[in-house]
Image (tube, rainbow, N blue to C red; front, side):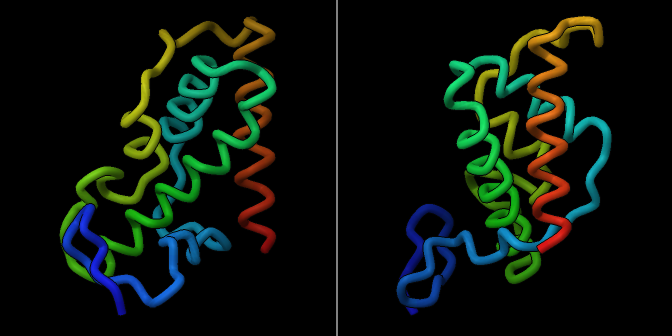
Length: 118
């Protein structure tokens, strides 16, 4: 075990905190999807899929931390996708007729579907 100095928790050797990426530990609400899509709007199009995966990883790390310690993760909050996304800038919520926003929503939904199917 090694010390996770970011939050005072312990991680297994070689564990970068992303082992929980294969399952969702918190319920996923519409607000989670919207917040992730708004975060994706703030990054270049070619970086959105990777950034989306990182946000899911951060939420999983926080959810595991909360489950193990009963405390919020110091960076990623309570383990929800919304909390992980809100650590980054969010674009103003656009209307659903915005093609770029729809593209970001689709990226988020595809990543959610991928993780739920693992």
